[in-house]
Amino acid sequence: MVRRAALVASLTALLAFNAYTQTKSVNQNGSLQETMTASPGLAALYVRALESSDPGIKEVLALMFEDGVRLSPNPGEALNWYRAAANEGSAGAQTRLAHAYRDGSLGLSKDLREAVTWYRKAADQAAPTAQYELGRAYFFGSGVPQDFIQAHMWANLAVTRLASSESLGGQMGISAQLRQTISDSVRAATELRNQVSLRMTSQQLAEAQRLAREWKPEKGN
Image (tube, rainbow, N blue to C red):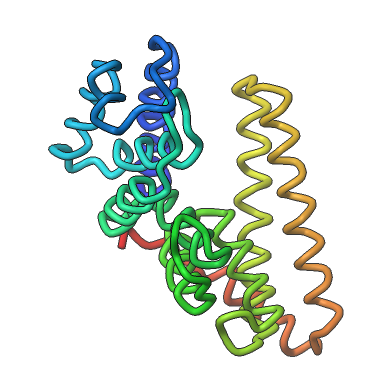
């Protein structure tokens, strides 16, 4: 049920994003108000995000402001919408917010502990990128004490989730570029898991594998 809800939310966000990118170009050098005036479609999406209880809409708007999709990039607006969506349980927004804390982007100061906090929220919802990043954090001791058991567990979960996405993507006929991106992610997560394994005792490895088998995703938090 959780996975289905996450997929539906992702699809809704992608459809909204695609619909917006089909609209006319707007003045990329204008103010936010000028941009909204020049693009009724964007203005409508902005209002919808303000009124909607769906965090996926807020995440789409944040992506537009971060990447400058047919409007001038606005890190402050991107951060505000990512935070709003993250607080409403969007795993995608939680992951992007974690990236911002990890990298010190979108006007934030670099804060690895805060990055781990948001990666964990998204990882708990089975977001594979967040699971991979959380595994890396535990492996290198970035923002958390080094813990090979936790590192292996999260890397293992990421591999499983990404491999499922790769298989599903092949059945759905996704683009070659997206297939390559997923394949690269599977390889990276597998490599991390293998690296961690080399640093573990057999008892630690068995415990990490047990934790991965027993792990269950949580609802949006």
